[in-house]
Image 1 (cartoon, rainbow, N blue to C red):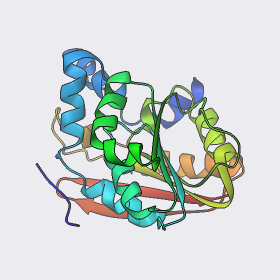
Image 2: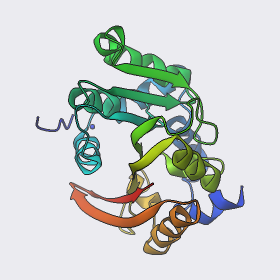
Image 3: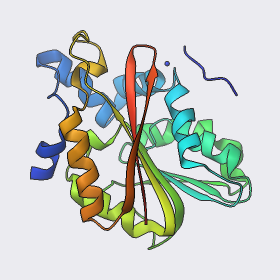
Length: 226
């Protein structure tokens, strides 16, 4: 499938290059917790390009029997891609925006009716699933919105089955990016290093990174295992 392209203290430690100033900050907040008409627009913009989502699913190595969780699922793009591969398993998504869950539910309606997709309201800091419930977990461009990163990573560890894999997608900082470009507010090498250290601190192992360029942005996939 070709990609479409019509596309606490711990939080301060891992924050990307700040947030856009003034009005841009208010608009940026719609991507963190979309609501209302602007929230629906934010969801539409997120769904315009799924190249990075497809790459993350490939890095996760989703197989037919897997139970996959996308933390901060937004409009459900990554969930839908996971469901295409986990045909005998489950693709689940958690988001703290009711507007995003509505879009995700519409996008995954058939798979939900077939009990192959499960969507729930929740946060990274308190995932609404039992221990060791998933074989694969991902978070795509959402970690900088978490209110407590280390707590969220501990939750990923909790819901992951022994031997399971975690992949975090982080947009890298590009100093030449314009004010409206998300790469202007991406992660630095030092912040990626801090993230990998924290994954180890919460009990995940084998932490490694992969990197890929997409048009005008660079994405780092941080991979770890339980």
